[in-house]
Image (cartoon, rainbow, N blue to C red; front, top):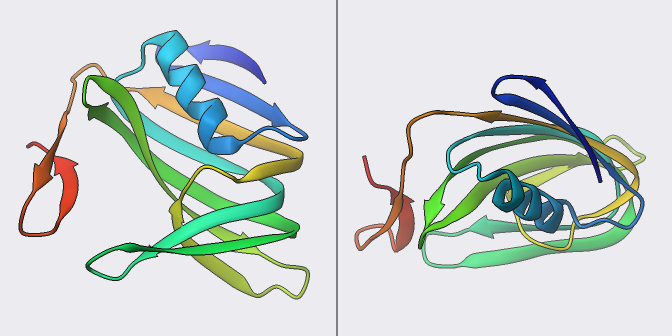
Length: 139
């Protein structure tokens, strides 16, 4: 991974072949102490790992094939005192058909993924919400 701070609170990251998108972003957030913000990314993957939340649990959507990461968007908050990226992505195959969902570890870069991270000054924490069975923003 290569990174560059392009503004006081904006970072560009370039992930290369073989890197796990989720893990690389988590590592960067911890190293830079980014506890709140937003994430955007585009690029290409050789394997993807997403999930669909059916209201009770996350159901995996995984495949090994070359695909375009058409759009990845997410937010950063604190979960159990650690930076936590909550991300969703849309992925396109060679036929142009798309699949989308919640980003899990296991999205492996084929050529490159370019990421923009914007840091926010205020910190938002996540807390368990019994009604949805999810860990949501405590706002």
